[in-house]
Image (cartoon, rainbow, N blue to C red; front, side):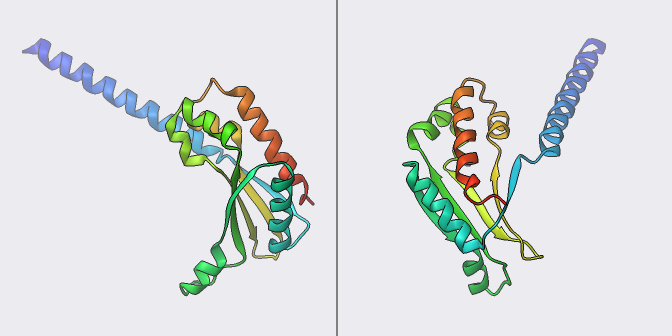
Length: 160
């Protein structure tokens, strides 16, 4: 009976340690939110247009633009200008899905263009190294590097 209690106590301690470790890794991942923000020289509309042009020049697929402010304002919420631009290169982006299907939560690329309270305009996106860590993808370093170079080139057209 004592052996069973000891085994149960050991199992409980191991489970608690595992949960604590999982919580710690989540807290560490959350301590850096993985968001890259770039200040734009232009209005929200012009920033979106320049990003769309840059995407087209690079031969990248533009999946769409969601006008979040329009949707929010129509629903009765006062929303400052905010548009979500989605784009990507299926040949590159889907390599992340082959490494981990959950990477589909971060693909295609999403770039948020928004106006801050002070009137400044920003473009924000999720850092690709952070995405790799989030999905525990270690086998696509070259591809993640390429994606980082592309997003930097796309946002260079609007950077202040």
